[in-house]
Length: 270
Image (cartoon, rainbow, N blue to C red; front, side, top):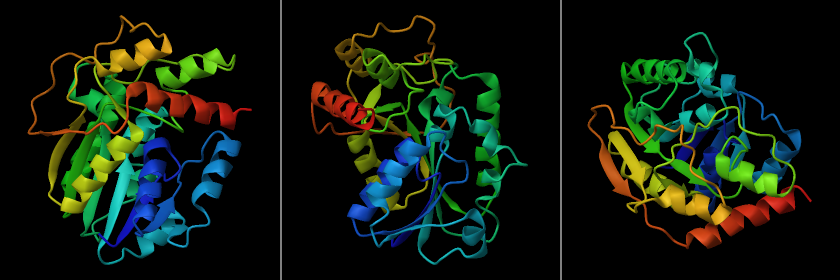
């Protein structure tokens, strides 16, 4: 993997993936099709990676005009879902045109693992499944990585953890609806390391990233003083699908990881 294109590069998980790739010296072309709602956050992210000579921000049209040899494409449906933007995957929308028949390389899709349960809203699930099925009909090497709750610096306020942190700073706005899966959680740095390891192997298939630990989300919530919502159904049985489970190694304790997120949030909002 010499070069990578990342769609919605300034979203949560994709931004961390981009930084990790740049740290490895890999060339990244980033596309932000749907603008970040918070302009200040967007500028902070651009400043963080914009000086790296291996990073180029480009328009969607430039990607469609030129797919480069040995260039992988990464799209985070996970981030779109957590931003309530999964409708952008519909056939008539711009993101659905991000990949077409001329592309013959490696396509990596990050998807919320909640779709493997009965807990996801039917409209959102239909949009995501329809998009996945359209991509599968193309002549591309596809890796689908299913992610549980991901937490850490830059987590959006559509997650309960970040809402709790902001509420402690008297800045919380409240959730529109609980979307994250509450039966597992991964620290962003650990998740990204596992994501990159899987991408680099270039073996097509479906992969579920998990902590391998019991009640990991609950332990995170307990540290933040959050009671587990009783309306969440994400722990119900998965639909049948051939999936390879990957246990993600934990690099630091939950308390240290969440403290990183809290400190980062305070710095952004001081």
